[in-house]
Amino acid sequence: MATGPLQRFRRSLALRLALLYAGVFAVGSALLFGFLYWTLTEALNDREQATVERRATELAELYARGGPALLRARLDREAAAGGRAFFVRVLRPDNSLVLVSVPPDWIETQVERLPFPGLIVTRPTYTVRIPQDALRDYAIAGVTLPDRNFLQAGILIESQTVLFAPLRRAFALAGGGGLLLSFLLGTLVAWRATGPLRAVAETAGRILATGDLAARVPGGAGRGELAALVRQLNTLLERNAVHVRGLSEMLDNLAHDLRTPLTRLRGAAELALQDGGDPAEARAALASCIEETDRLLHLLEVLLDVSAAEAGVLRLHRETIDLGELVYRAVDLYREVAEERRIRVRIEQAVPVPARVDAVRLGQAVNNLLDNALKYTPEGGNVVLAVRPAPEGAALEVRDDGPGIPEAEREAVFRRLYRSDASRSQRGLGLGLSMVKAIVEAHGGTVRATAAPEGGACLRVQLPGDAIAKA
Figure: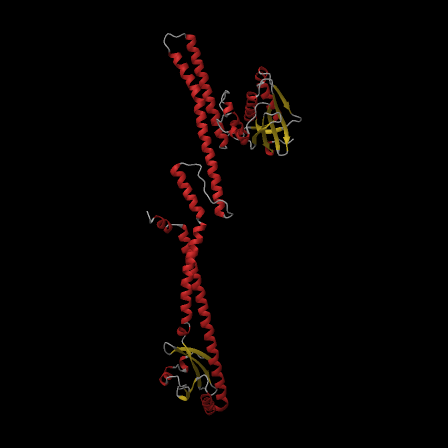
């Protein structure tokens, strides 16, 4: 187990990034050193070439004025005076020697190895480098004289291999140290930079291993791309946890809502199957079976409709209709229920609000909103349905003076099969408001719950402008 962290580091992205940084540094340093080395050698060659070519041209001009005798006298005076020694010789076209001056530090036999005119590219002045040994090189320049003879001038220079050896050693030391430093710094930077990725992997592994949906990825407080990724992933985990909790609650509520009708259905079926029973009671039991079956089918149909709407595949048959007409239809439908409980239902609409909507689906949503308001409004209470144009479409409100909706539950009430503790005693499936939300969102609108001025609940539907028919 002691080698585990080392093995993980060997397979880590941080190591690969560090090696990449070091490789880029090594290539860049090598290219830079190669360019500097080439620049220095070219500058040295140009300087030596210019020096020897000036010397050859100067001696050629002297030869042209006074011939070999004047040239010899000049060379003897320079040798006696000291200074940098130059090799000089003059050759006839047949390569026979006219004049030669060899510096003391040149080996006489090496003169025979110097190139002859016929071996050199024919041009007024040329320069070549001839390695002598491991420490020195020759730089030779040649000039064609007016009498068709050929003058050569040369100097002995230090070998570039020896001259630049300290530079190469310095580069090797500095480059090696820089490479090691770049690897270490690259490893540190890459390890810190990839920390959020490791945190993501560790959190995902913990969630998969333990099922802990409350686990979150640390390190989302920065401003970089990885910090943004961590924040987005935590938001995704939070939404996933909410959906899972909602699914768990939905299943619990579904089991609760199905148990009662199934129990009734079983009891009615057992009663109908009893031998010697009253035929009238058997028919009543069968009728009860049909009623409970219809109730279960309705529950499943509503669940399918909500799922289709949330998935964006609910088919809408739009037509132009005044939204107030939907409200009046809903009030007529629930008039008897309101009168039995002495609840006053009032409609507020100043002007017609035409809209292109699915009248059946949106009417179903209005019915559910009114049914929900009547269910929680006490006897003798008030329910108000308001329809009005809004700045960005149209608004429909249903207000009551019942107990209201706690602020902590104002989003949860629109979840499928959600029922608060206060509504457990009320008959219902817990699907009414979720169906409203699904239908309204299928029309491109929104629905939200707030507190009504009367002290109860206010459910506000906002339809977008493209759903409103043009006058």
